[in-house]
Length: 111
Image (tube, rainbow, N blue to C red; front, side, top):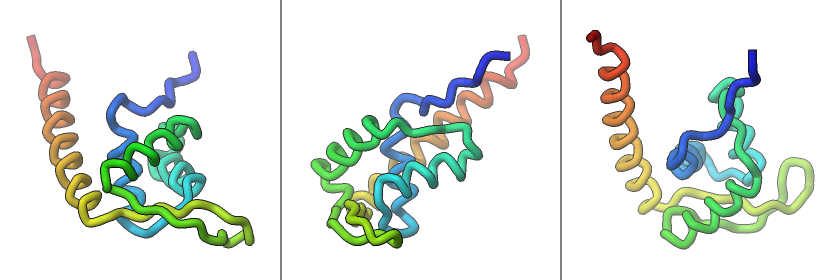
């Protein structure tokens, strides 16, 4: 069997980043690791895509960032969700749930 595609569904990376940061501020590697762990390895995040998403989300005002020391005594950029980001997460989650329900109905439809 071919290796399964582990790419994120287009348009979901922002939502998954926002959700990861809903719990606590994290650095990029931590966010990528959380997405992979929670999805049980189904999704792997490309570091380049992650960096681009962080820049976009900061421009939108949904994330703030600061340089801090990690638990391994290295410097890393930590991201945190803003109030606007928390509101956006709610909007994106509702939209995703509506679309996922519609797809489930279509898959269950019998001819």
